[in-house]
Image (cartoon, rainbow, N blue to C red; front, side, top):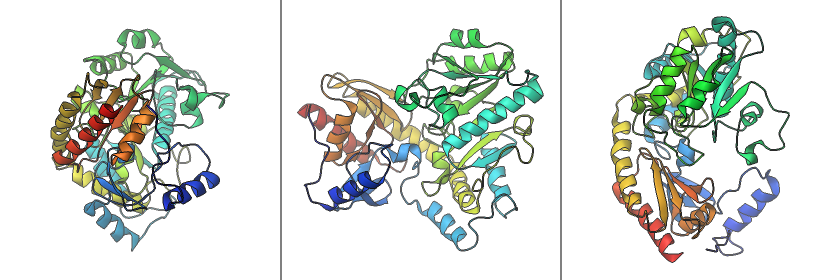
Length: 411
């Protein structure tokens, strides 16, 4: 299949804005050729006035849709009072945000940061310090086990244990102290653990790898091994958490509780970047003043958005909706298997769709879907991701699946 990158006719405002962006911005992304100017719920509008169904939701940062009124009201109110103090001083809603998030996760403490990658880096630091001060690992010997095809961000330490050449190559020298094992292979994990291992870092569902769900029983087995070997289990729920899969945390659906949650994306309600590490005091309590921090971490504006998100999740309504609509999304996408789709995998309102590579690449499929009025994004090879906001309706799911069917038929 052949497609062109330019959807709008030459000389349009879309092309002008894209040209300016390409000339002025570092090329660390390859976005689809659409320029969004406004959005509401599950829909966005571009500068030419065309509307698109957003089935990416900013990689799950927009779980509750664009411009959710509860989140906007909380942020608007906070803008009028206080937006930043730094952590040099207390402010009046930090404690409430941290308490409410810890309670949501069933933990003692919250350490607020800004981005998902910062949460991961924070979790790695905490795990190493815990290993030295609590487990008794000799200084500078701590190791953390990670999974093949992981995605935890693109900072230096994180790309040091990436198996994606695009993310990793030419950014060395790399941070030591990590061992990579095959995702889904409990024997490989057990074999890699020795007395120097302080933590296992894992995505309950591998998002960037294609929304891959591990084999049944794998995560409970990981939990058992970590408990038995006195190793922290760190769950990166930055994409999978906060309602996306039909539960507050994807770990719940496997019947496990990690020692540490890494959260982000949807925690900011699609308004401001908010991330957090959440754990019990015997883990997060190892940090002392000056050992870790962030000028903007836990700022009042972020806390206001985060508290609104926590309040919404506390009702269970969003989790139930993601479960019901997710089952419908997967059933409808499943009708395309054998008709241009090789497989559909994922959970809740999160699906990886493997397109037959003889028909088109994932990039070509995403461009064709754009022309049909649906925003999706490719991952590796010919896999595209569907992750619409939880506000999506059955009719909108039908609209997206019908668009994919037309794209496949035309290939």
